[in-house]
Picture 1: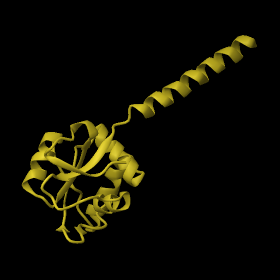
Picture 2 (picture 1 turned 135 degrees about the vertical axis):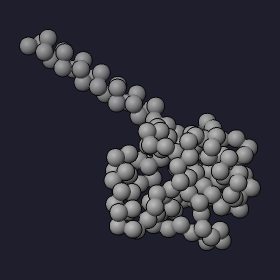
Picture 3 (picture 1 turned 120 degrees about the vertical axis):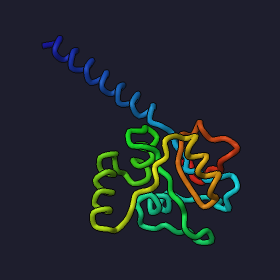
Picture 4 (picture 1 turned 90 degrees about the horizontal axis):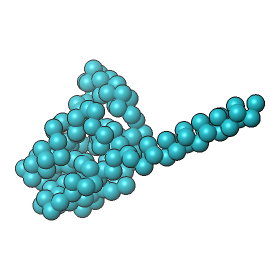
Length: 145
């Protein structure tokens, strides 16, 4: 009986540590625009509204071009989980519904952080998210959770 209790405690401790480890390795993201953009900052609610297709304009900016990283990207998964509390499959279902009903189109997908930076440089009214470690002088951080 003691062996069972010891084994159970050991298993629970290992699972707890695994849970802590998984949370610590979640991708850290930032929402960015071109360094030349007139945008200063965005809050989480505005970011969610833009990325969920609820709005496409910002006061003083007008229409905003919204960019997304590809499905399966850890930064994308972390971004949507934190901004909209939806996982990858929930986001896919959401956009399938929006497209089917004619209520919206998903953000434009770019292949990588480098492609995102290039798209932002070409359009000062564009935004996107990337891994925090990819921030450089070509982009301005609008939101860092």
